[in-house]
Image (tube, rainbow, N blue to C red; front, side):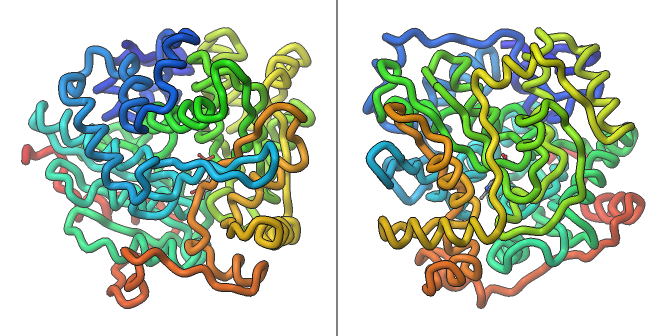
Amino acid sequence: MRYISTRGAAPALSFDDVLLTGLARDGGLYLPESWPAFSAAELRALRGRPYAEVAAAVMRPFIAGSVVERDFESMVRQTYARFDHPAVAPLKQLDSDLWLTELFHGPTLAFKDVALQLLGRLFDAVLQRRRRRLTIVGATSGDTGSAALEACRDSTQLDVFILFPKGRTSEVQRRQMTTVAAKNAHAIAVDGTFDDCQDLVKALFADQSFRDKYGLSAVNSINWARIMAQIVYYVTAALALGAPDRPVSFAVPTGNFGNVYAAYGARRLGVPIHRLLVASNRNDILYRFLQRGEMKIGAVEPSLSPSMDIQVSSNVERLLFDLTGGNGVAVAALMTSFRRDGGFALDAQRMAQVAEVFRGFRLDDAGTLRQIAETFRATGETLDPHTAVGVAAARDLAEPGVPTISLACAHPAKFPDAVERATGHRPALPARLADLFERPERAAELPNDLDALRRYVGDHAKGLTPA
Ligand SMILES: *Cc1c(COP(=O)(O)O)cnc(C)c1O
């Protein structure tokens, strides 16, 4: 399988190179040159099989030709054996036609683990083979950070630097990053918003000589391998509820559009997905885009669902590539206009294509608390604030006769303050994280400044020296 950039001006790469590279050299995101297709019979054959087996089957075409191909099945099996539920992404019923799929059974209690636990292994395998080291640099609005640090902590080939917006993550999220006791894992508190952190990372990657000297790479959702690994749980959930013989819809709490793009990927593979409900908090750039066809950046405002406090939803670029029929020049023009003017608009024909699948939804903090309280009262189930935004979207927009699966993106104990306000009870951390508040914290503090970041990474990364 070869991968091409959404902006059409970077070389096509193998899976291994896409994994290590993250962002394309022309600023675009990588996508498969052609999408594999699964027939209804092939999908039916996967129904009821263990998660790791479905995962290996779904991802196999995407890694064809990779050096990880031979050991892939055992890597996938080992990855998901670490999750604390045998189904990995179990389904729970909330209402007659409304379901949750729980994606928080990995080590850091959010869906990011599903992909990043696998990515850590893939990186190590490819880098060992090439006798190389890399420096992972990423920005997090909360959950990516701890998941990335956990995914890389045992690596012999990686140093990892994670920027988070100081004071804008929950305390549990912060502690999950600052308590990773590994010499190659660095948590950095930046005086700014998540978008500031993301802009710093992008600027660092744009510095070609620094990028080459330290072998910079990314594990945020611009990395194709993450999208690939996330496609899997859309397939398992849909199969469990009757696909391919019955369509399903998904409600996806979203910030960067990464998770919802993975759902779209499952649809492209042949899973009959009727609607994708794109659920935003008050940072509603995606909602406004889906309503009006205009992507217009606004100011980031903190909310009860901080992992969705984003105004630049990078993965929309992958959708734009499809909407323009794979026209990299057109995508590059839209993204340039977005950067330069703070927005772009799509014509009615393209928006009609978008509307065939996507519906937008937004919910403010009061609505989020109401949804947590109502779901708790009606079902006894405790939702985290991100999950609540998705469930509210599902309750508002689900169509009769089509099962709707809402993604439970984080464990409620990651956001105990919001949950306690809504339900009156404080959710407990699972046993394996019960001593989180006693573990010593360690983090660097940096201003919102590229030179400061450059210095810090330069001082702490081992660069490209072979292990
Ligand atoms: C990362 C995250 C999101 C947003 O996911 P995207 O892939 O950025 O759209 C939503 N909820 C939680 C709990 C998250 O960790």
